[in-house]
Amino acid sequence: MLIVIADALLSPEQRAKFEPLAAKMIAPSRAEPGCLAYWYAFDLLEPMRLRVVEIWADAAALEFHFSTPHLKEFSQALRSLGPRDLKITVRELGAERKLPS
Image 1 (cartoon, rainbow, N blue to C red):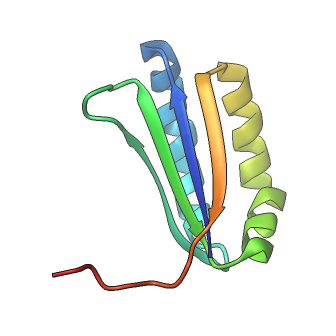
Image 2: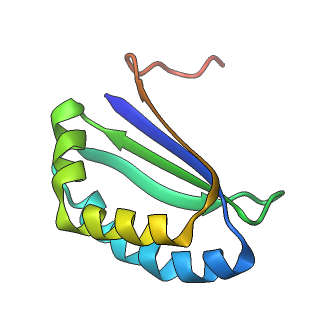
Image 3: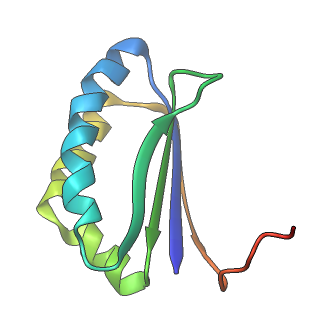
């Protein structure tokens, strides 16, 4: 399993433009094969701080996601907004465990 975590800082104007772009990404991304979780959230303490979390079954599922028209359109629109401090990381997840009691 792979987890993609993105973090960016948006201005209020960028956030207003970002929200409709993001809304168009969620349903098609969640419907992709191998998508286990996909969401965007704004930080409660930093309302302009965007956090994105995606969980993919494997590298093939993530590669497919990067080839989709909706992601290509979204990426281009996001770049045009010019978010600050954009950081994206991909990590491999280990086996699922139960939380300690």
